[in-house]
Structure formats: C-alpha cells, structure tokens
Image (cartoon, rainbow, N blue to C red; front, side, top):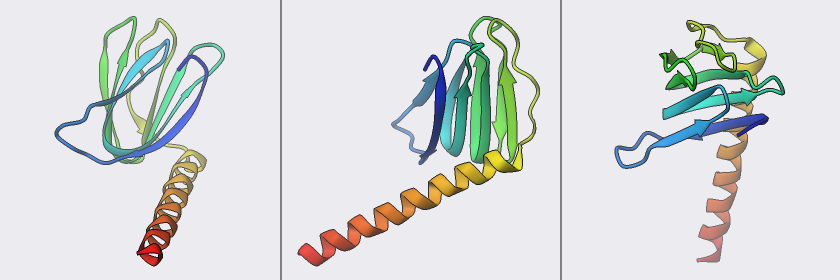
Length: 116
C-alpha cells in the first residue's frame, strides 16, 4: 500500500501469514485487530487494539513487536519508533470496525439459516 489506511481483524492460524507492505515498513499480522496508515510522506503508522504485530522498517531492517493498546511509526528510510500508548481515537476506529464486521457476519448467518 503506497498511501491509505487499512483496518482489519485477522484470526490467528498456523497456516496463514498476513503481511501489509508499505514504502516505510512491513507489518506482519498475528491474530489481531489493527490499523496501518501510510501517509503522503510515505511514513507508516501501526496501531494494535488486540493481539500483536511485528513492524520491520524496509530500509533499516529493525523489527519491533507492537502489542495491544500500542502504536509505532516508521518514517520512510528511518527506524521504527519504540511502541507507545495508542491514541484513543485510533483504538475506537479499530473497535468500531470490528463491531461492524461482527454485525454483518451475524446478519449473513441469520439469512443463511432462514433460507435453509
């Protein structure tokens, strides 16, 4: 992703590897609810609501593990910052997304059950 925002909820499995690649960082997702933003200056911001991710600077190669309630940023060509407390608005956006996905999944399941 060059520029944009991804919010996701990924279940942990031993068979699947999920990675988001931006100009500044590679983010490995391991069973988590998260957000990755890559801005116009090609800086990457990663926030985790639950679970954990690993963030590796594409130029520096330094890797940081980001846990629940934490955020990091990685400037293009720079090193990833140490994890720090996540912004409440970012955590709210991630949790709202997770709730919306859960509601949509429940609705779909009800439709399938009623069709049977």
